[in-house]
Length: 558
Image (cartoon, rainbow, N blue to C red):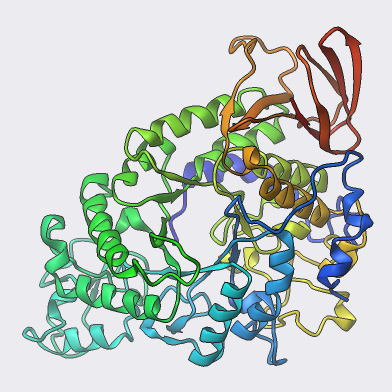
């Protein structure tokens, strides 16, 4: 959860420091929340000059949306986002075509972020009650939206009764749940505060204060028989019984300290299988398997090994080392090839892998900030994410171009969502005073929904397209037959095909600030959607020229 990829962070700092709170690059995003009927009107469809099939409401693409509840929507006016606020915004998400929501930790805790869990079966009172949670799950299911909860298997709060009891003596039922030692090998070992005060306990995620002691599952080969494993799976089963559809597992490479895929994957496999067996037959939406995705912040070749343990993993490489680089450097030609290579690597470890793609999340700089504050680049990232392979996640606020630099604190990438002009926005949380996101440089949902050129309408358009066309939703990705790996010509343009059954689509993106052309040398049926006014001109038999303005995209049925 708090892992920092230091090398990558330092490499990106130069571009990040260019972004200021009064960024002026978002002039098209000046922002009362529209009703779903208003959102499906002609204004939204003007994002593209071409006519695609209408979205029929089927969520083929399995799009997920990440929500930090505290910052999302405040239903009771106390300044903090809450579960009822999330429920109130389900129609907004449903209209976009979202098929699942990932809620950052909602359990009783001792922090604003929630990753120090005091009780895994108690709702954080800032967020509401268990009845509120049950209502959210039921209302989400009415809209065919899955609910997954952020689960923390690596550590607990030092206020968790498991830990306080474990500290009380050398012989109690919870002593084995944590790591204790009579010596402190490094700065991550903290003195036991009460009880067995001649011991130290391990707290890797908060080595300064010791607020998050690491759980101990014993040898990975027998982890399922440990007390901590049984307690954690019992807590997860509690939520399955409440109707939850799955879990996002935090910091899965840290459960065993050597970051070994072998040990950690053994634990993850045991954890997944235990819960999947329990889940079967309980899904309110008809799914056979529980949904479980892991946070494994590693380069893709190392991350791939964790597919031995889990069906889904977040792809950090695809954004940090691939897409953001391509957009910032107008160097996009090789992105599809790289993504194809990544998926081949994943398939070595799990044939039915779920490639959880994303831009930023709650632990990273906001995507638009990484891209130098440019709203056009942020739109480009959205278009690529929603046309490329994988099962995409959208972090709340990305769809309106929110900004945030975490170099001083994670809180700055978790600022309040902006639903309407500030003076009339009754659901905007106020617990944190925004430092990066204002009406001038971001706007809000209400105003952006009325602007056909807003980033919100780019997200909405491409999300609905992905749900409408199976080839975009889950099709294979292929390179053009004339792709030349060593040819740098037109490197600012990425070209790829998506195919599912008899449906075949050509996708072209120009990621640069200059107009580009691309020639398609085969028959086409018709363009179905574009961004920023791409034109198609027939120049010969089975030959067509695409003229692509800066930061433009087109999808063509062939």
